[in-house]
Amino acid sequence: QVQFVESGGGLVQSGGSLRLSCAPSGSIFRGYTLGWYRQTPGKQRELVASIAADGETKYANSVKGRFTISRDNAKNTVDLQMNTLKSDDAAVYYCNVVTTAGPRADYWGQGTQVTVSS
Image (tube, rainbow, N blue to C red):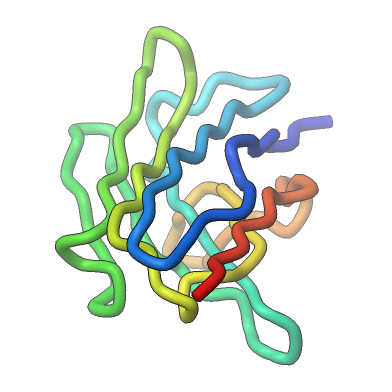
């Protein structure tokens, strides 16, 4: 069974930084667009950043200029550097593939909690 395994979350003060990392178990995802998603209670999971196999990146407006997504195809990992964190960034963060049909439901991992204190 393939799943993504996320790490790096924690408690950080507003304005601080965190770096999240994600590694899939199982198959290699070199050809996929990979993304970081986040979810808060009562809200739908949203895609905040994605990176294509060729390195092209896209960001949600809410994180543009503050978050940077990167991937290491040799290590099969995808990271999310988060700077200037705000209280609105507090959420559980997940990674998954990004396809025209959306993320794969069977790939969700446990996520990593990001808490931002004011």
